[in-house]
Amino acid sequence: MIKTICFDFGNTRLKAAIFENDQFKMDLVLENDDPATIETLLQTHQPQKAILSSVINHNPAIEPVLSAQTRFHKVSHLTRINFSIPAAKPETIGADRLALCAAAAHFFPGKNNLVIGLGSCITYNFINQYQQFLGGSISPGMEMRFKAMQQFTAKLPLVQKDWNYPLIGYDTKTNMQSGVIAGMAFEIDGFINAYAAKYGNFNAVLTGGDTTYFAGQLKNKIFADYNFLFKGLYALSETNNS
Image 1 (spheres, rainbow, N blue to C red):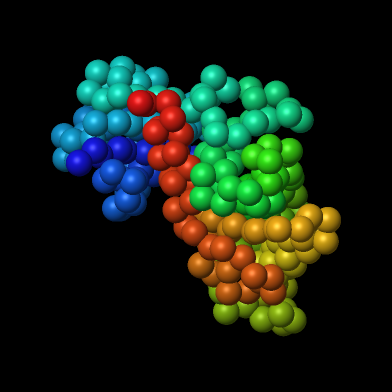
Image 2: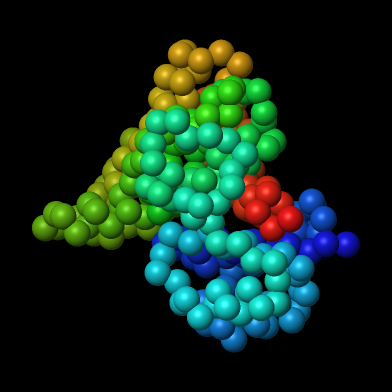
């Protein structure tokens, strides 16, 4: 049995996932990126392979630890990928977006795929049926939208999400919740509609922390997978850690 540990260091959380052969087994939230934390994970799970996707300035001391104890790869513009990037410079594309594209190319070959990542930002990533990443869009995520309204106005408060928000807000809090949460759902549906109208053989994938909730709100049919980014990292690990 071959074990692979996949690290996803995002702006909000540090996460890891364990695969046994090609099967996803579990995900974990890390308290920090100290070498001792990584050592404990390696000792507990004994992976043979490791891959890191990081969009933050993580502790560089963890990389020698991973290299010494596993076949290790850090996602970058030098990563061998299972799709092509004809319209952009690879070094300008975030590691998280590369992983999402790799998952789409691996799990939905031959389709026009729009992969929507719900994180600190919402990323829209389009990989066509020829396995080409053509680009997409980036917009503010939920927490960023709530914080922006509080920080850039004199009197609006910082509001937390509440999935029981009303469509028609009846006070400041519920007006803001409706604007952010319903606004995101309308935005996502709008992008899906625009892509579906332009491309046949179309598939939409929703992933990220709020996937389960938004999947139930959208009018469009989508494939929802909370762990889609991890599956993309696993695919990249198989390509780069052979």
